[in-house]
Image (cartoon, rainbow, N blue to C red; front, side):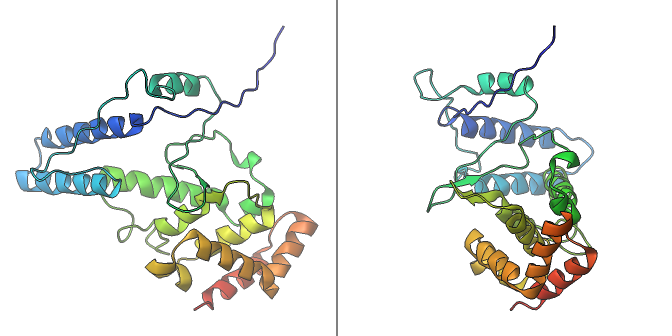
Amino acid sequence: AGGSVSILAWLWEKQGGFGHRRVKAIKKKIEEIMNISRISDTTKEKMVAKVKDDARKQGLSILEDGSIQEMPEPSMDTPGVPNWEIEELKSITDGHILFVKPDEGEWRWKMDPYRSLPRLGMDALHPALCSVDAHKIRLKMMQGHDRAIMLHDTLGSEGTLDKKGRLEMRFIDLILEQPAGQLRDVTEQVARLVVVANPQCKPLKRHDTCNVETLDDLASQLLASEAGQRAIADINETGRVSDETQSLLLKETDAWE
């Protein structure tokens, strides 16, 4: 006899657990850099400085002497689940999604795409999302993130995913936030992908307006346009966005100021 078990587990890690492990990981990375014999001390110092700068951007504290502030391991009495139990459960499931703490403001689901493992291929994506290259964007995200970690840069200038279009990682990160309880239909998801996939989107290129609220407004504006209405019609009729309609969507987003 055979069978399967479907389980959806929702776990909160012990407060401070992630920070503790992150400090340990960064210290290990610095130790590995200092043990590389084939590079000069000057190069090592630059690489270590970059690691510490990234740690500071992640919210860790760098002390005056240059060391990273310790974060104690959570005690047994701390509410939540210890990381080792979470890792055990992840090892026997067909994927997992990790959320990070949202920014201040209304509660949002904010997924960490780089540490999540959905284990779902293109067959799980709606054809409309595939037609606007959602799967290729995810690959670029992973490649750009890995390159930033391993080589301390990205393809092209800092924060970009490819040399040709100079697609910015901060654009893509916006599609991973969603207000709690707010559902998005396929047409909204397509519109958001089209907006962030255009590296020349002027409203998003400005740092003061590169946020989820701007993306939501732009997606609604795009769907209300003639090009957006054609995209909706395409999805309703064929389940995909035609190449001709995609060209119109690109022209629409290029024209924004």
